[in-house]
Every structure is written in C-alpha cells, then in structure tokens.
Length: 193
Image (tube, rainbow, N blue to C red; front, side):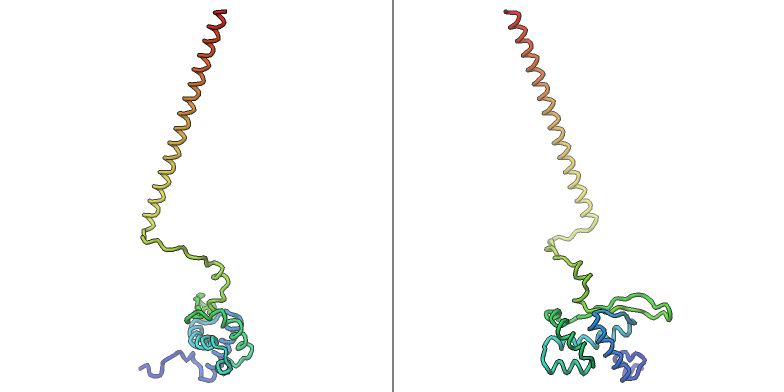
C-alpha cells in the first residue's frame, strides 16, 4: 500500500531533506541554473516556486517567511531584488527542468533546473511572432504552392525576355529598312544630279 507517500522523501530524514532543499533553492536563486538529479529537481521545483510567488510582494512578513525556508540572507535579498521584478507578471511556472541524460558513475537520471526568465539563450532566440494565418496547410501543400509560384515567376520572366528579344529584332529590321531606303534615296538623288 502507498500510505504516506504524498511526495518524494529523497531517501532522507526530514531534517536532512529540508536542509538539502534549502541549500539547493538558495543555489538556484543565486546562480539561476543548477544541475542535479531529476528526482531532486522535481522536489526542488515544488519547494522553490511558492517562495518565488511570495517574493512578488516585498513586505517584511514575506521576507521573513522566505528566510525561514532558505536560511540564507544573500539568497533572500537576491530573490526580492532581481528575481521578483522579472517574474512579476508571470502567473506561475517560474522554473524549467531539462533532462540531461544519465550520470556516468551510477546511471542516475540527471537534469538541469533553471529560472525561466533568466535563460539568456532562450530569450535572445525569441522574436515577435507573426500573426497567425487563418488557414493551415501541410508542408507538402506549402512546397507545392512554392513551386507553383516559382514556375509562374519563371514563365513571366521567360515571356518578358522573349518580348524584349522580339522588339529588339523588330527595331533592328526597321533600322535596316530605313538605312536601305536612305541609301536608295541617296543613290537616286546622286543619279539625278
């Protein structure tokens, strides 16, 4: 039976577990990203997210409450000064867990837990999304549409070049006829003199 298994005890007594989570939460707040096992990362997420929510309201009471969990005054000041303003408009989900594979020594499932608003690489890659189109098409359809557009463009280009060539040929014929007529006129004028 699974009585009294509401959360992962991490194979530790309660005092050890609380100290572990407090230290990991302080490290996460100070460094914005830490690497640990997947089980510890999941336990840390449930531990640290309520503290981050508390930091949205900078009062003496909330600072003392957070300090009772973290037991690190530098982490508390970092949380209230730099983390809280960035997450002020976020309605939860302050952390992200990324799986990293298995540890070589004991094949433990490793993960990286980070604060979402402090990932510079992900924030730099974000661009403003374009407005969604009303129709959704498959990739094959898009590729077919693209080839059709290319074919029509190439057909237009071919037709334009053919028209230019035809007009050039006509112009050269006209100039040749004009020169022939001018030569005949000149010969007729010279013969009349």
